[in-house]
Image (cartoon, rainbow, N blue to C red; front, side, top):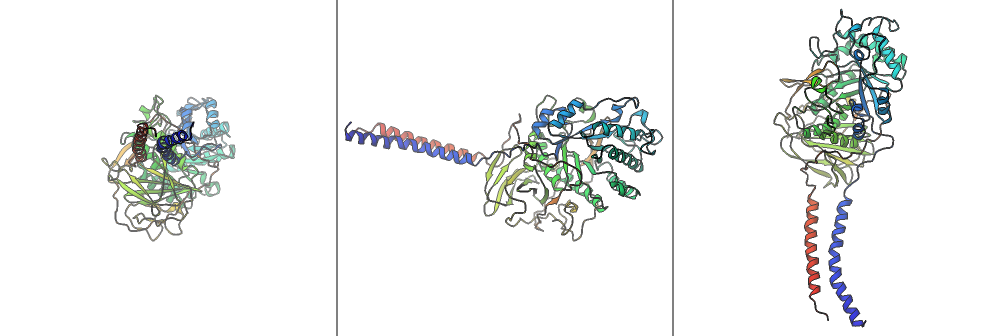
Length: 597
């Protein structure tokens, strides 16, 4: 080959091939840059899920519960089903030993709920549910309640160590949903016997108060505590309980208000005990399944901010008996095995809230901003509280954040002049703003205490200086910051009318609650800059060390489109690829028609 031919061939290659390759290489580089901006979700710890997040009756769908990432569950041990005809009977219900073993093997702690006195053991002269011989010494064989507690605690010791004593006893006599027909004093005796016997039988036993719904009798808990404190032997015996319990449904912001209200009541009386929310969910008769998913993220973040120690969603799966106990489904999984949108939302929320230390509700006007302190990481949750779309300006703690939506779609965003800008869809307020619009999470690899740009002004009252963070009641949307510690006995302000709704509790006698509906009235004028002080989470009972929750897994739920323009980068890439591809083809055609020199 002559040198001129070599030169011409080389010139053809450089003139034709390189221009064709360069656009392709540029496209590849751009695609890699975009893909490098995506992120792998936080990974699962070998130690298992975070045991602060649970689901009721996980054993009804154990594989789904494992995929969900639930760290604890509740099983209802009904005395009337275990010994329906006499003390010599013992039916292993509701959970077999094999099923219980499977729950424990999957890393889910099981909490037992004791309820329903059988007819043969009931004292008809006192009231429904009150056992015979209740006021006899705990070691007297005629104290039937003591006998039952002793037997069941011994049988499950080491497998079930947490025991909740009764369920929603504040429901008044005469209600079809009543579970306790005795007085407050009778209930204290029931609790006293259970606490004494359980701790004598199993030194590791943790005794929970029965769950309170609030709406049936908002004064019951305070009256109960007053009577309990007046008991001369209560103080020496830890006041006969280790954990207080709530069942709170439907409106995330009211859940926060009520939870902080009850914490304030208890703390104001000198009792420093943790609260668990053992049931929470939204009513599908009032909101869509998509809004139920929004509820999960909003409610869990606000419950953490309220200082709640553990949270469980009611419940794992719909069952055939739900139609009798609950007029609407609550399962994260339907009876046919398909998963509701709330299932995915639970996975996403618990993954990015796992390892939480505390939380704070930092803004409560047109926009809600909740900070979840996770130690070296911080998750900030934002949503709109009005029907109108909003744009949140969130002070940045570091140079980038992972922006995550309800469905787990995640990508990195970067601050502009010290703030992240997040577009928020408006809330559905056709029947009152029962919950906010679609929430988003900003996940930063920085501590909550890291320096940020100045927080935006907001009418949200800041925590009281020098007070216990759990005692700060920030329930009012428009009340200015108090100069003294709020009155712990002050009740959350109810709306003028309450809509009766049933409380979904898996007991033979279903429980009805009434839920108030409110429309948030945002205050646009800033009055106060909130102090981002974290709310302390009480940790005064023996619980396992929390570990990161399970990574979200794919579910058969269609992914809705976000208002945040996730697709714009890909549209730009597509347009650029077409343009560069056209340029490449044109260059190749020109080279083909060039005559040889």
